[in-house]
Length: 328
Image (cartoon, rainbow, N blue to C red):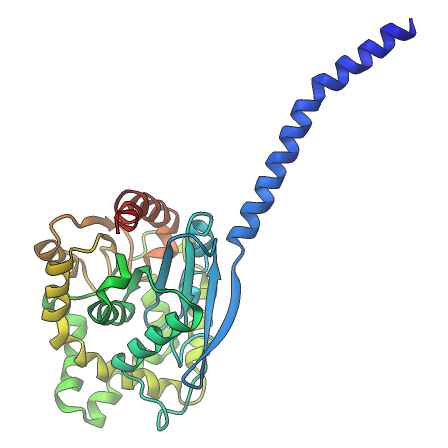
């Protein structure tokens, strides 16, 4: 009788042993995944300025460098980063004067796209990355393209979300900004100050969004709170004026596209009035293999279409970027 009970106990143990081991293994994998996708919030000093950045993912994985637009910061990527970090080393810095990076006095720091490019360039060196795919949006586009022209060997590909490189993309919204470029005068500068106000920041997030219930109000609230810091509005107006320096570089950006044929994924909010859908079309002239997805979204497409964009990025990276890295 005792022998039968012992055999039964052993059989029962054997029955449950494999599932328990499997369960433990799965739990361990889940723990590893959670660690890999955990976002770290860090700072590094670049030429005396502390640059804040978000980072997640394995250090030995392909790098995705995310460059934000106006009036936001790396916080625009707060949901995208963990969606990609299981497979990629994802890094998103804040430019000086944005987010949680230092905001030097504008009399002591040059708030220009040329200087921002230099800061991002030195930032990548400071954190030890020398090859990366670039996610560029709004202001991030001319910064990323300037960086690519300077270091074409470092760029493995592009994800472009409402980021311009063609004259066709500067339509009616830009008319008062172009007037400021022409004169540089205080009257035209003041005519743009509305862009630093809460109503405009809210509009940038909500205009063209297909479902307003998907737009997190924390996003524009945080952006506006940081823009309300004393002196920050003047920095933003300086940058709006300096954007004029990007337009003459468009032919250089386009020449870079034609010569190097970097893999490019376009995920564009087609309802955007700032960088409208017309700006996405010309990329195909210089990049015949560009992959384009026009989304039913506004300027900040990640707010409403984040899961879709993340899925598109993962497929694009595996198909077009990672194999190219292996060959090189």
